Image (cartoon, rainbow, N blue to C red; front, side, top):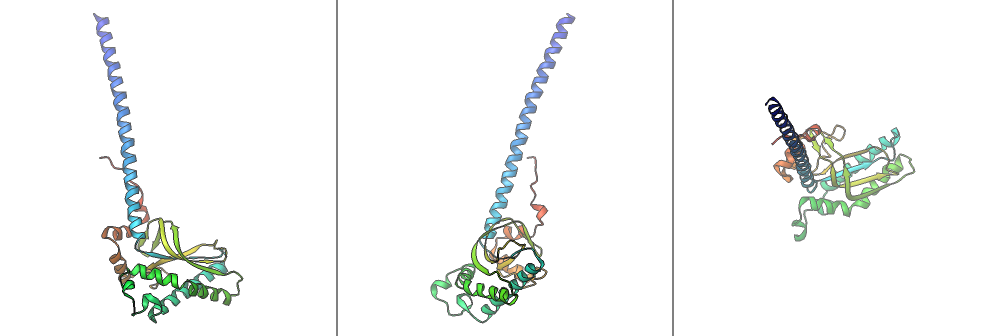
Length: 234
């Protein structure tokens, strides 16, 4: 009798152990699936926000020849000259963007598309402005200007953090373009407020808010660490 009870207890223990192992494996698989699903959803959400933001902005990117003190100083001089030329050109009504005499087809374009047309039609002048600075500084390398898709890591501009991804950008490459770069948001115009400290004024942020969805705009106000993936149990 005692042996039968002993065997029964042993069998029950083994069954319980097997049950716990099987359920443990199931719970682990469910946890792994939840983590993968949550991570994938978070990345997809961030990617959608980044794409939406990129569709509405144009960035300005200046790449220095090298990281030497002299080349970095020249980079900022080129930046200032380019921004000054663009500001004066638009204030003076130069080009299709600033001109009040626009064709019907041009009036149908978005402000971003008009800015793109302005940049494309004035790449030669922008190159000349940059090269004039280089010539005055006595360096032997030259500049090139282009409007192209560029990959940017997370970048903070004032209190706005733009997520990593591909953006259209006016790109000024100086010489070998291997030095640290400088950037700002060219459209909507966030470059003329404070080039030194990258301060985004309230009026400028309102312009940015107008071209983005509420969700996209709010995402720009998050600090980079808030983009870290977090895991939740459902």
